[in-house]
Image (cartoon, rainbow, N blue to C red):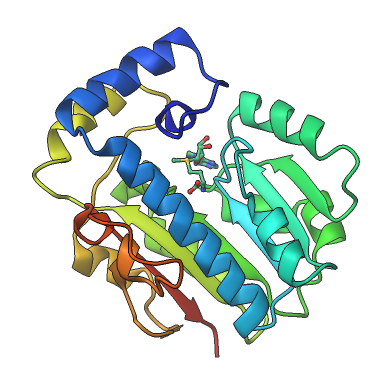
Length: 244
Ligand SMILES: C[S@@+](CC[C@H](N)C(=O)[O-])C[C@H]1O[C@@H](n2cnc3c(N)ncnc32)[C@H](O)[C@@H]1O
């Protein structure tokens, strides 16, 4: 569905049908997806350029699209290493095919609901050095975890395993009245959508040091590529924070 929102071609008729239902409920869904990608690119560039981080663990990475994390990171830090993790078989097969010749980037299967297994995975451990800072990317994925799946505990488990200086890059759709009717469409999808408030999304950063401007609307987070009209009132929040 997200691939369809972004204008991609790697989607099934059932994805397109469900995605069109979301667009009918919230006509700015495509803008929301594109604004999220712009935040992701700026946050990765920040991590590589300003924070000097050259390792990325991107969980719920999605299908390869334009300006992927490894491309943005390697432009700034040519030796940057990226581990993409996703649970969807179609994402894995496309990602692995695309990255077959890239030794600095891997794509592995993993479920965010079991962060311990992702962290213990041989491929991830062999690819990233956990004694040095890593940027952990949870971008538009935590809203697929139910409260009873303990999303805050998942974030804590991941960040507890990271070296000081590591950072968390996170974005999350908001429990806004414009989006809420759309959650019923996801009830029939592979993962439910759980929208959360600004306070709940901010709480994911507990114990970490938020970088300026703090938890923001997608378009307001360091908009050095210019604020796209309307990005600042899209129903999602984002932020980047470091581990001390
Ligand atoms: C909306 S896309 C976001 C992609 C990318 N992070 C971005 O922001 O452009 C969400 C992705 O998260 C993946 N996903 C959903 N639940 C997951 C889980 N429990 N574990 C791992 N990946 C998951 C989906 O398969 C999908 O590829």
